[in-house]
Length: 82
Image 1 (cartoon, rainbow, N blue to C red):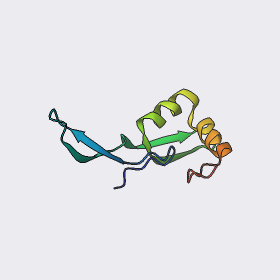
Image 2: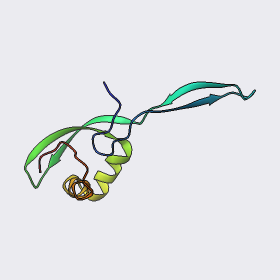
Image 3: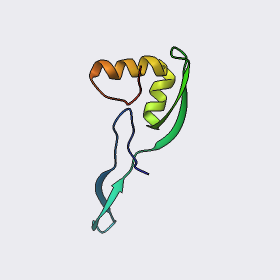
Image 4: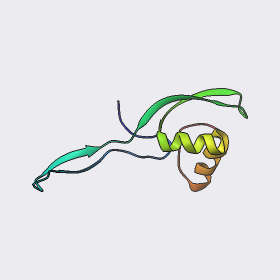
């Protein structure tokens, strides 16, 4: 299961664990991605998306249809047919 947000495109990045003695070891920072079902009232249908927590907050603020339209205007392909 890939940890990539379908709407924002957030994906794992790499960095370092830094100990008290300043020793560095590689680690991954993974986004908080959840599988969530949304109802699009304008289209009268359900869609299941893998979205990050920040995308869920934006959807709660704007509404899913408005958020998808905003991404479409930016030229981001979401995979959801509007």
